[in-house]
Length: 321
Image (cartoon, rainbow, N blue to C red; front, top):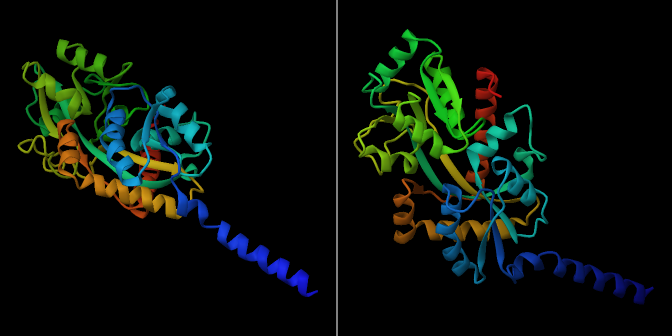
């Protein structure tokens, strides 16, 4: 009996010792940061801004791996179904994933439950831009023009269900206007047609718009965030121009599969926050027209829930497909 008791006690001690060991010894090998879009885009840039510094903090390499396709959902689903051990992470475009989750044709995982938030990475304002021939010099003039010609003012987007598309749908909902959506295969073609006058307006990210402002062929009317963009301090927000309840940013966040040990998530988040405080990271983000905005896991998860609820409501009200 005594021998049996000793064996049971030894087993319990070993079990207790084994429990927290993965979190204590993690990471013991390189960490993969999956970007669900091709190299060179805003999500890829956000990942690469943080990867090296996060690796230095962890003492292991952080390798950026691009798994593009289906508007970001192939890479996202891959990470969602990966082992929750902290070695496979997602640098996700929060708005895009939340929008896709709200669409009738949902991805093969539940965005609301498949991930745990690690940290926000960057937040990138968007701006309303019109072709210079459009007779509107501010947002209220654009709204008045759209109301005078229902369904005839065209707005281009990077494609159905993208953040650019849904930013336009939200604009219509809150302003009571009716625009004609023209989807493209990416931001580049939409901007090209805006410059050429084939479409009237876009709501696009600043990196896509800023290089074209000097051409004189487009006019920026306002930024979509609640506060003015650091890169464009003289351009007023839509809210400043009387468009209430309109605040949209293209946000990128580091996510881990649900079930990842909390200690691992906290360590990753601490590394992200340390990196975001570095001047070099802030400057790199600013060059993209973005802000470095690392957050705690709790705050990150709160943002994810808010985005899912918000875009589900916009999809419902706009009947977007």
